Image 1 (spheres, helix red, strand yellow):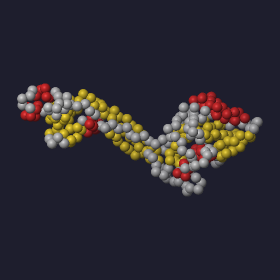
Image 2 (cartoon, helix red, strand yellow; image 1 turned 90 degrees about the horizontal axis):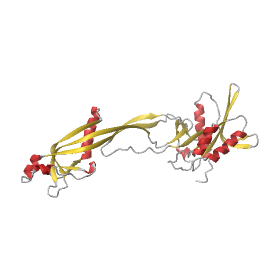
Image 3 (spheres, one colour; image 1 turned 120 degrees about the vertical axis):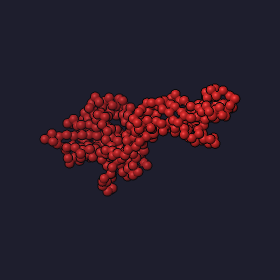
Image 4 (cartoon, helix red, strand yellow; image 1 turned 180 degrees about the vertical axis):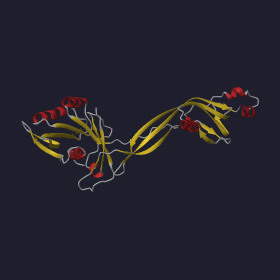
Length: 326
């Protein structure tokens, strides 16, 4: 791709602002791109511009769009303020940036009444944070989209929906684990040894998913993470968030110990304190043929979502999606 002129991003900002205006109470407003306006002292190139009249009163808006690799700095915002001061009629002012703003630029915009927007590709949705003993419930939902951005050569896009997920994440915490060792098995296997001492043998320290349980043939049958998750899910169905619960093993079950003389012990049950943390998240799903773009107004905190076709996104240089305002 050649040098970044910023023009594709300016046209993208033009299309987005046109989509917003088309949904406003004032109709038939043409949003123009790359306009030259005559100021009191000199002429000025304006990236995006529109003007209309209501009740004999003219309303004018000038927009600067910044497709930069770095956040807009204070000096650039002051330069834009000088342009505004030179234009007659005190037009409304907007700056749109793909990579956010430095704090100094945000301060100037706030003091001078300049609306500032971040307009960038949406970050990929993060992975659902699940522990080995946790679980999640997913529900498919429709997500609002303000508009669809396409080129004039493309056919009109209709009935395009953005889908997302409501994710309920359950993260149980386990503490105070206690095994009930079979004393009858101990007496049968080790008749000359004090069963009370053997019953107190410590199990190896390990993560729950690495604490394996074995059948009579000493083959791994499950692990504590699986057993405890089932206990926690049963609690969740009961609507209980915190409780001490027990699991009784119906089949012969064994656990390893730290003893070389008695490497396995038979366990009849296991008890544990369970506390379940519940968190709900709403995430947009990725779309195979379209890209999500986010328009965030920093003055008010309002966010609008748009969908861009591949041909639109392909005209723009790739930016670091982790960039945020400073």
